[in-house]
Length: 208
Image (tube, rainbow, N blue to C red):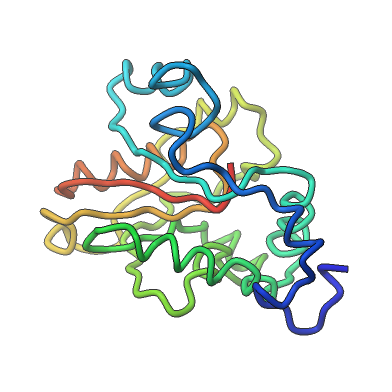
């Protein structure tokens, strides 16, 4: 069983378990979120762009299938911090192909950190140089995973700068998050960084 190993690292889980994680073709689908479409952009991303939100060109590594849901349940919601090692190498390899000045994890609120004990994204970034440029403006009363699609879309700007603008001005930045659902979180973060003077922002998520 994948989650029963005492020490879990990518390449150390059995090939059968690893094969159940479905990788996403990095060049297929919507140019913004990679969902399957015959057009350059899917309808959702086209709406974001028409509303004036900046492009993010998100790259998701894996599909959010049953195996990935089980992984997140154990890692993110049940405190299985050792499970960060399952995807550490894969994420590092992808980030190494991104030419940016800074890698920035999406933050969790203070309340979430106190309850969970860690930021699940930072857990995957061991061995990667990153900067915590953002922080949450408020504690989210309802977890993103418990929100309906419409509730996610209606979320107000949750982020603010955790550093001075001089640390961001003119920088190209890659945001890293766990799951791309509606894209709202990443677009809020991108907007915050661009308004602070970042030159360019792209994003990577483990799953979509």
